[in-house]
Length: 233
Length: 233
DNA sequence: ATCGCGCAAATTGCACACAAAGGCCGATTC
DNA sequence: GAATCGGCCTTTGTGTGCAATTTGCGCGAT
Image (cartoon, rainbow over all chains, first blue to last red; front, side, top):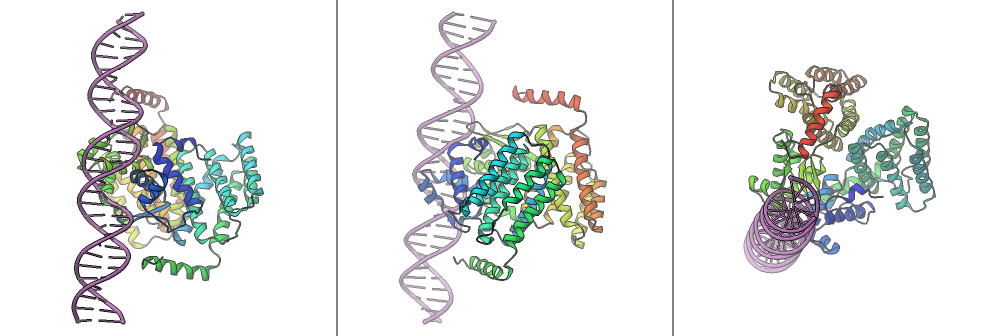
């Protein structure tokens, strides 16, 4: 799944980067967790230097917060940031499907169809989330547009964080049927339809997973915000 | 111009980052230039460690290429990457103006109008390019959408690189009149118009500065590429 | 004269050591 | 008894040294 192009870069620092990224996306490290340089380095068998480099990269990707003299923590986006992020994501992913509509090769279609099948079969929630995200990154990948790929990857990754924080426990975050419909319009070459479907799809996620439970979610929100401000948990 | 949020982060490493970024965008360091860690550090009065951190950040922003064991060079995007980049930029900046249409405060309008006036008055080419870019980043800034701001900033910066490499010497890269029209539709709250204008505006840049003169541009292109390969200016 | 081999210089990769800043906890004072 | 001050301890910030890799050059062989 990790692309070859990611494997270039400087050897071990990239390895640390991937390890941490994976840990964060798997929620082995939950948002807000402290990320002390030396304990991470110790655990991974490298020096602080490399951990530091990885942390800088991760902060640049928006997955960790890096506060001066206070160290790194797993990013804890606000609900507001989350909504804005999905807005940005929508703009970019619309470009993705518009670019792809009617241009998919047979091989690509097969890959995507297989992936959707895998999503459909998956039972475990965490894995299911990862697969859903991968569907989006795979689409981006197929555009062959480097900056687009990069940003969509980043945004999808951060979306995981958002959903981890604010998502409802068992909302099927990406409806598999929507992925299938999307693929169908892409094959049919209906760019406009695909764009609309993607917009609707992402909008569904925000309304389905983020918006509802506004009342008690807000309470929790406010509490955690203040807790952080006071330096509590 | 540099935002406060950029000034947070770790003091001196950020300073190095900004210095290099500025140098690159001003074309004091032209695309393809080598960026040895120690000579930069010596020049700026810091150690390689900080330079390294800055280079990692810059590579993450796509302004420098970082190749394993081969060091850092100022990024040298291909023409293809350039076109893709502008495609991505278009998607995001359409979101920017759609978000902003009819929502600008009086203060914001004044700031933008003043900036356009400054652009209009500017005679020097390099400064004029910078101002034109700043107009776009200012717009993004006003959306208050963190990820959107970040990406537009990055893309605008990289656009400078592209234009430096492939732009025609005296093409007015951003027609000031187009900025004015854009602002007018934003004030009028015509989101659709603004979006179209932005798309047209960016498309103009690519066709005006990138696409035309395909023949001799290609020649020059090949020449500069080979020149760099041979270590010539 | 050209090609190839190998050594030397330059540059990066990485770790460690020291300096400084922040946080925690106990002591002291009101 | 609570609040504040002070010092220790933990964690980050930064410089430097050494090993490894790459690049460039020169010498020798064909």
